[in-house]
Amino acid sequence: MKFKNIFWRILTIAITFSSCDVITNPILPHQQNSTLPNAPPTYRDSSTSAYTYKLLLEDCMGDLCSNCPSAAAIADTLISPTGGNPNYAQVIMMEDQMGFDAIPTNSYSGAPSYAFTTDYRSAAGNAWCIMFGINADGYPTGLINRLGSAKNITYLNWQDSVSKIIQRTTQSVVINIHDSCWVPQRIIGVEFQLTFLKPLSGNYSLETLIVENHIVSWQVDQYVNGGFDSTFVHSNVLRGAFGNNAGGLPWGTAIPNTTPGSTWTSYQTYDFNKGENGNAAGGTSANPTPWNMANCYIVAFVFNSQTYQVIQAEMIKVE
Image (cartoon, rainbow, N blue to C red; front, side, top):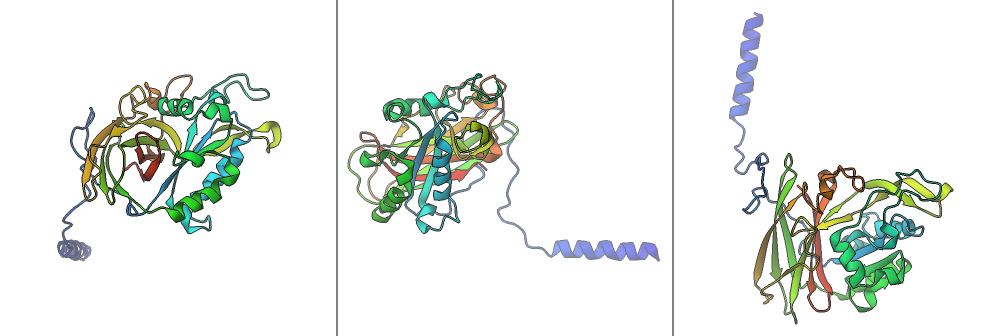
């Protein structure tokens, strides 16, 4: 009797499975590559809001800057879905660790010797620090689309500046990002597809970056007891630019054609074992911890090669 019940149960399960629809495009397991991929992604993902204008806000700061947590709090509000302003969904924000307040030290007064020894600077961030004169302006400061009056804006005015730019700007280019991730090998391959919507004057380039979200680390903060916070949460920290293992291309890749209606595609790769001269893999005194790929995002933006004005930005999670 028991055997008969088992038989009918198995038969029922078999019939149930045989009646299921066939998945025509199943998600395939990650490929097992030991070298950088040389073909477009097999797993395709993209921003669901690529046809929306988005600006780039850069919070230029350092972990030794006592006012920087206040700026970071405003930046976090600007990208929060609960920020109360629908425009904030159009903000791509990244934290650029750069300049004198980001230089590692093992002798900060009152803090353990290891507290501020991790180096969150990047080759691209260092280049931009010099290019935009961030050191001369002090920290924290901001770059909003990297143009004119939107350069080096005090964080107290970020909300107003961001809202005004979004309200008066229409989208001129669509950035679609498709990526494949080889997890065991810590390698990604990414296809950046640009579609131009209206005429542009001048020459333009595409910048492609890796940022890491939710890095819990030490931060000087004048508003907490002791003057520093050991559990400060850093959002969207610039880690490095695509390009080469020495730090990527801080000036991006030239776009050959921006004619309205045209589409241009760039296929790029990133090796999380060799990025930033090996810093991505961790294991060094200045960078003891490997970058967490599960918290990493790809940021891309199109900018005027002469004025450096950013005309469109996009971000997608590494998948």
